[in-house]
Image (tube, rainbow, N blue to C red; front, top):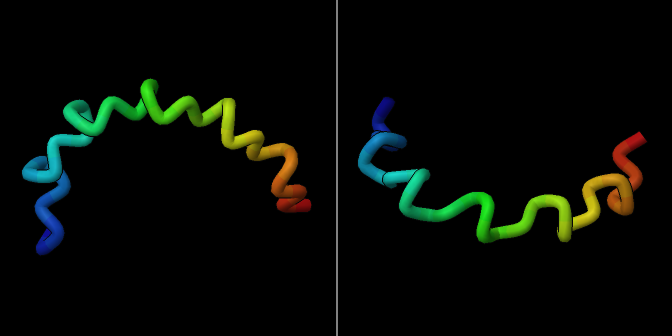
Length: 31
């Protein structure tokens, strides 16, 4: 991929630290 996702080092972004649960995806009411 041109974006070179591996180069972005997703692990380094610490996705857990972003606290995805805290974003409250349910609150976005996608449905």
